[in-house]
Image (spheres, helix red, strand yellow):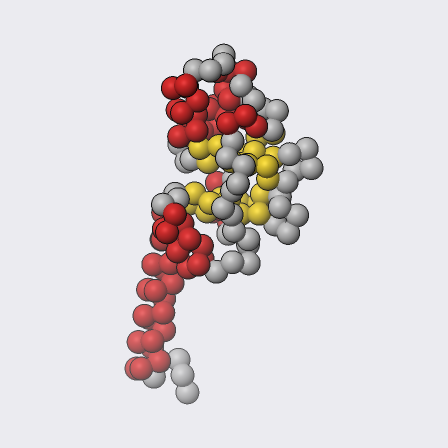
Length: 141
């Protein structure tokens, strides 16, 4: 999952809302994974979370800690999960991003719906080519 690793953006639980907003302002970042001191995933922050916090204006925005606005119960996947199962889960829940965590719950990537769909479409195309080659007898003797 090289693309998932490239999409991973993290912040510490004591990072601020301003820090999270800065990270989310990057073009290809739609989800920031919030990490505890042991580097395990504590939650996630999306652009929607930032907008919701700004709209509520409960506190001085730049100093609000990431842990105060993050989603704590996070749907995630593992590197060993099948991509079509991850895609199905994302589609079912309407997610654009889903974090990938290791056996210690440390984030190691973020799957983006567009990337997942492109990879799945590539697999279908490859399967079609393999089937055609098999039927035509190319490469099989």
